[in-house]
Image 1 (cartoon, rainbow, N blue to C red):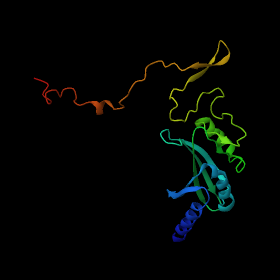
Image 2 (image 1 turned 180 degrees about the vertical axis):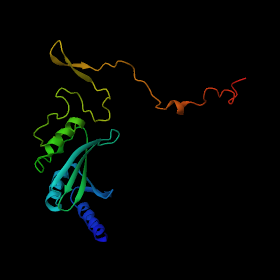
Image 3 (image 1 turned 135 degrees about the horizontal axis):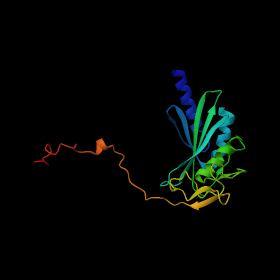
Image 4 (image 1 turned 60 degrees about the horizontal axis):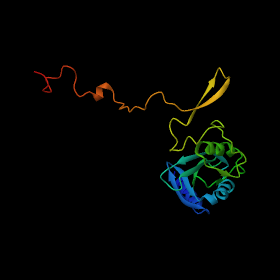
Length: 201
């Protein structure tokens, strides 16, 4: 166990010393690295070649609307040979693209398309920027925190016209505020307790 912790500390120090790394830490036993956007592609290649992180398991986005830059792009890497996981975090804004890693891991094309579709984060060098989860005519990016819960359009098949129709969202009723309390939690007195509370004669 002591040898493993020493190895983990050495790995943390080695990764923290790589070019472009602005911070390295352990969270729940896994190594997390913050990286400068322009250095991310070279660093990810180095992690694959020199640290045996041969697989990218996932690429995802995170939206922090009050922060500048607004978005995180998170790469979850796996080293099967060393039984290690590594999370690489790159920050970007709404207009500046992140370099695509699809040349390093071809499977990354799928996840980068997904991040583009859901968050609107573009990737420089990604050959295919088509939407992958939403419809091609979809407006906006649904996982941004400022995207309305109802969306902008609703889609249905019109049996008379024999085609898919896009309509503006029309709510059938106003939003209601629910207190989500059961009747027992919201009740301050039970029927028949009026005398006990001074309400009866």
